[in-house]
Length: 190
Image 1 (cartoon, rainbow, N blue to C red):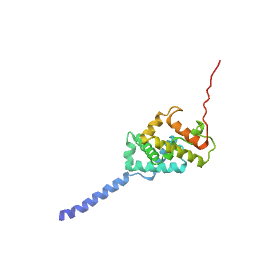
Image 2: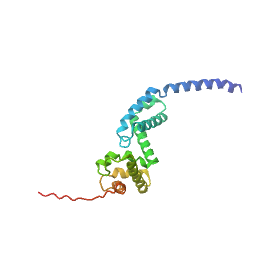
Image 3: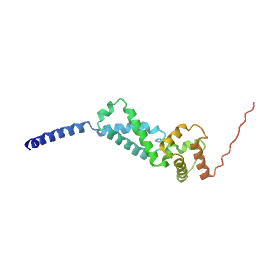
């Protein structure tokens, strides 16, 4: 019994020393801010470029928290040879989770400005009209694809104007805005 009582102070001293070493290696405020600044480079990704500043800040905070949780020691994190790949993986996983949680986030995958330039939607739609389009589009996507993986495979294969995704977009635009799609055949003569 005396040996156990004598070992307790030694164990407590060891635990205190271990905790103080761990705290010294943990992320400090400057390192956290550096990571958040580096995350600004991801702003050009298709899903993220359409986020407003407040939405992007929340997204970046979530990523930074995940990185810090996954790699609690900053020195080990920056010393990793594939540090950038690890952050890329966390960012892409977070985007997939957000899309999976709410298919209405399609506005980030297919931004309004891009759909206007492709002729899918008219310019000048108000917020309610845009929301109606994306709600319709998301419901069609949810009905057509059972998993997020199937949807992403369709995005990767989406290279023509007659793709299934383009057809869904056109159907929603036609239903909401009474558009009539006409095909014009152009013949060149010399």
